[in-house]
Image (cartoon, rainbow, N blue to C red; front, side, top):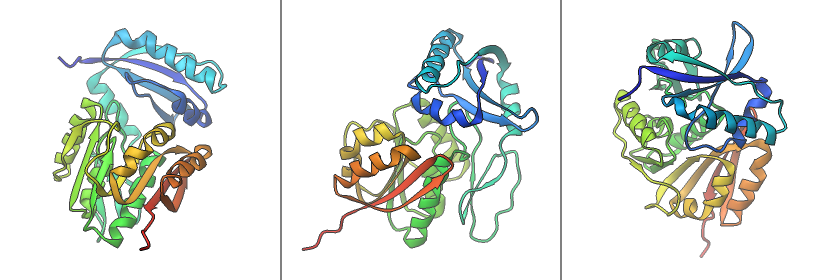
Length: 288
């Protein structure tokens, strides 16, 4: 049964420290969210838990990551929040956002009349899932928009789909064959729900990066730099033409680029948004 009340682990954090902390967090149990309250001018990190027994491990993980990053010790605070109140509270921080030339992301509670040629993704925040505000998601969507303008008669595979936003964006842009996977059953559930809201049909499976997939023309992998490097052979074996990689801090990008170039990929372009970089690669064309 889904609990009516959530346990919230919350702490103040300097806005400039968020990326470093998130990069060092290693947890399959929870996903933190950071937000800047324009009213109080305070940046806060929140973890929303359905299971209160996870509080101690969450606090330990946060403190360990802060120590590894050389950040001041965090001071977690505990509170409870009604699920309904949580849903309403988030509405202060999510609004219609223009992501690329054609892509607009809107939460369901805000009306937006699409301009000619625009693609509107309707997506609400979830306990552990993105909404398009993060720089890595935006970078991937911008490259998908660019590739769609060239040719939509290509297949797309979204590796680690999360909320499904990238796969949904690809389908709405006109790509004919879009599929995705994630190793988290909750991500599959949320992706399926979001696809239905946006009136697109996308096969989403529960799987991981341990093996190659039937090749798609375009693969999108918005994961983390160490994972992208570790599973580069499997990712490359799953594509036939283009690769979009993200989840990469600026200082990590050269390492990711080198790993993929060593396996025969060629960088086409990279895009920096805030402290994150997204890369577009292609397979070297054979010269017979």
